[in-house]
Length: 285
Ligand code: F3S
Image (cartoon, rainbow, N blue to C red):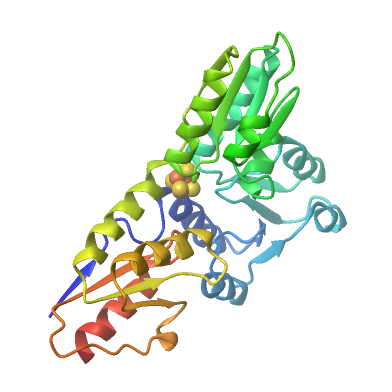
């Protein structure tokens, strides 16, 4: 029986970079804080907590920290609003910015365009920390919209040039649809496609493997939206799909005729966990 691991499974470039940064900083022996969980995976967060890494959940919590002690704050891949970064600087802590370079590029774009007087429209989920970060780098009016219906109703301020950017993990087809709607309205709009290909590639590769697999194992956090999406993609083409957080959740039952088991994982799943699952299937089936 063959086990096929989806090529883009697990940490994307930006998340891996941020997590590696935390592990590097642990070695310095300083007190390490991350602003928000470094990754949307309870196993990783618990492991880091055991090594002394603390998570700051809010600006209020940040404010309560003592000033300028021997500690470091790491900004995660999603980035933070400009205001939050300023708050960190005021406290005099060492700041390590592990914002994904692709997200940082969006910050720079919106900062520049809004300074030039353009109106910024961000396509994405308003509650998502990445979007809150992007909004926080605008130097002028900014709006967020997420759905096709919202795009249809949207009326920008008169006479303003509009710059549109997207959440890096936004669905490409939906973004195109929204862009078409805005263009048809005849606005003076400049589109910057900021969707990151990591998510799209992972989804496509997962679909390809699942379409031929007798069973599919999706590894990811319960609350991870991208892992849930992978699960849905697999379920559509492979009835025998398992969604697990850790190896303990896996109760795999394979028909005797099974020839191919596929494994995929959300962007917050560490390699170690993927390897464990892979080894388990290899040894037991
Ligand atoms: Fe960066 Fe793309 Fe991951 S924007 S954080 S590499 S999904």
